[in-house]
Image 1 (cartoon, rainbow, N blue to C red):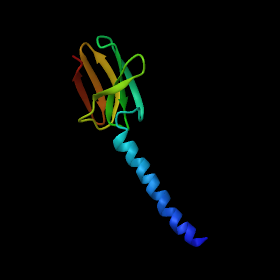
Image 2 (cartoon, helix red, strand yellow):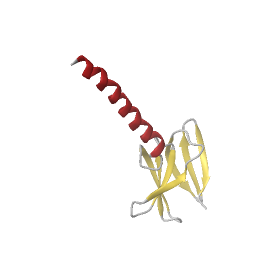
Image 3 (tube, rainbow, N blue to C red):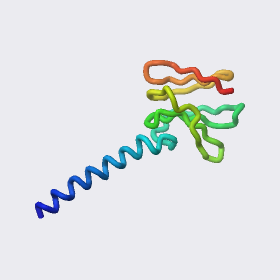
Length: 100
């Protein structure tokens, strides 16, 4: 029984690490910790701050999503659209992104 445990523990650890890597790197464009949403009236899309993916996703009314902003974000949270700009609370700063 002891040999079985010695083999099982490393296998479980490898599976957990593989799942964590998958969530961090491969699923960056998936809804992975959605926190805030704003509707872009001009683009007819929802913008979703995705905290764990460190990305803002654009989502169609049909639910299809794609990256809108994926570089330079730490922890995107609250968002508001004012005119043609998106203001994002991102960690210790406010990011301003032009929508057009």
